[in-house]
Length: 259
Image (cartoon, rainbow, N blue to C red; front, side, top):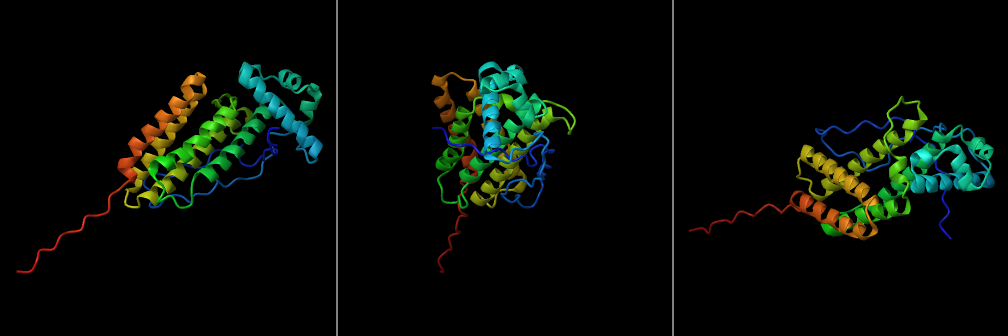
C-alpha cells in the first residue's frame, strides 16, 4: 500500500518567489525554509475532515495520473473527475477550476521536495567525502522524479500576473530553486570557508542548474538511460566542485636551522 500523503499546505507557495541572495553578500543565507504566508488561493473550500481530505488526495492523484499519461492539456476538470471515478461536482466542491487543482498538486510536490532538501543536507558536512555528499543529494531527487512523472509538466512555465492561479506552479518552482541554491551556498561555505563569497554563490548556482537540467532530461529518457544519466551527473558535479571545495590546508613554511 503506498504511503499516505498529507493534504498539501496552501502556504506561500502561491506567493511570488523570495528575492535572490546577491552574489556579493558577506555570508551565506541561513539554511532554513523560505518564510511563507498562509494562502488558500488553490482551494474553494479547504477540507477539514478526514473524509474530505481523502477526496482531495484522490483528486490530486487522479490529476497526476492524467498529466503523466496524457499531458498537461488533457488534465481537464472532466478528465480528472473521470480518473478519480467521481462526479465533476465533487471536484468543484473543493476547487474553483482545473488550474486550482494543478496549483494544489504543485503545492503537494513542493512540500515533498522541501522535505527531501531537509533530509539531504547534513548539519555537518565537513568530514563527509564529496562523492558521498553529492550522492546523498542527487539520489533522493532522482527517486522523487521517478515517483512523480507528472512533476516536470506541472511545473511548466506559465507567465501571468501574481494573482493568476495558472502561474502558481512557476512561482513555486522559482522558490524551490532559490531555496536549493541557498542550501548549497551554506554547504559550500562549511566545506571551504576560504572560498570567496561570489565564487561560492556562483558555484552553487551552476551546480543547481546543471542538476536541475540533467534530472529534467532524465525524466524524459528511456529506462535504460536513467541510471547512466545519474552517474554522469555525479561525475560532472564531483569534477566541477572538487577543485573548489577540497581545499588543501596552508603549507607550513620550513624554518632554517640556526647556524
